[in-house]
Length: 459
Image (tube, rainbow, N blue to C red; front, side, top):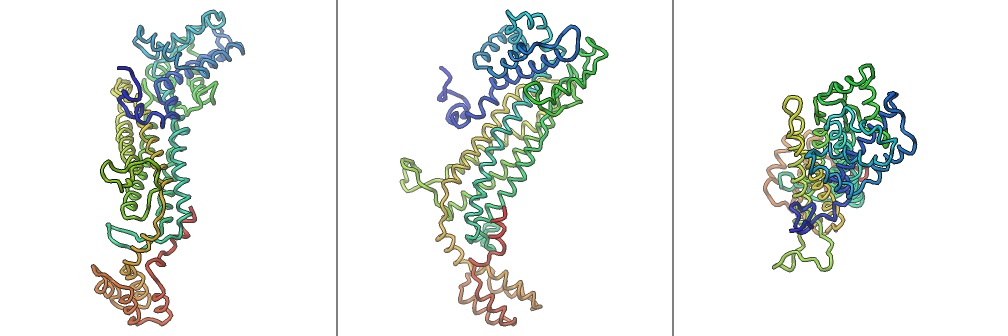
């Protein structure tokens, strides 16, 4: 059976393949191989500039050629490396051999070919390659996806800033809010979550087999290898990697920054699960309608249905993303002694975790774009909940020192259906100044929204 979108085991490469086109070049094995080539080339060029008599600075033409291996890296190149790996049974060594094969008929490079992967352990290449992948995945896919959701929510917050809505605490009627204010709440939460994601420092180490520059110093004992390594890691691309330098490690970089990053993404995803469930509930209440799309079917047997499938899809995929992100966060910082291989196979799923998250962001945005407010339903629920005015009435009574204010209102309203006439009759009976009575008499559930509209417009 040939591999296709129909035969792929993962829906990310099957049903949803087209939606993840932006992530695939970054987080796929092909993307991983390209980053490995990038790291090897950056290290190689830097070595030529280190001042060693045995490795003179490369010519401009050689540098351009080497950087071109990275820039023009193709799927055919990935396949060629995989063919070499069939013999080596070692993926990093296959990359080294592939680079050396590209030196053929280039005397300047052929004579210094042994400086490819010089003094490096495989993890020097792998950890920095993963770091480059994660940085690109975060900056080019994850954060832009979240930003689009934030922008849409802000638009909804401003558009519906003053549209009153009955709150539901514990699922019961509560003090009114506005539709826009509820959207604004999520905007503020997501902004903080996105800042946490963006602020994670992406680390890289290049310090040898157990993190002590053993091999490096055996070749040039008097050379400052730590400063050299830092320069390669921190110098901006393409001549360096543009990462933050990790000075202490075993054979592997500890992956603590990865755990921090994955926890931060999972936190944003949890906020979005909360949002998806709330919107789903508001659709169920009739507060939102969903814009129809010609040809779509909601149920195979019930023709009337318009299901909130985008929010359900988002919730499901956010859950999958978080399950993977939490496992990555908990597992990757743990390694037996100076290195075991349990992280290697787990790290191959970075793209899967990011893929489910990116897919969910798209589904959520699609769902938000289809929402249409049903102000009649909102108004109807508010008009049936005059008991929510018990809060402002008892608060005004407290202002004027009326004893047992809370208890009086509780007796009249708790668990009861309260009509506008009954509420107004109650207000007329209160022993408070006439001006305050008139202010309370003018109040309705729809007007009792506090600063909700102002707060919504502020985000």
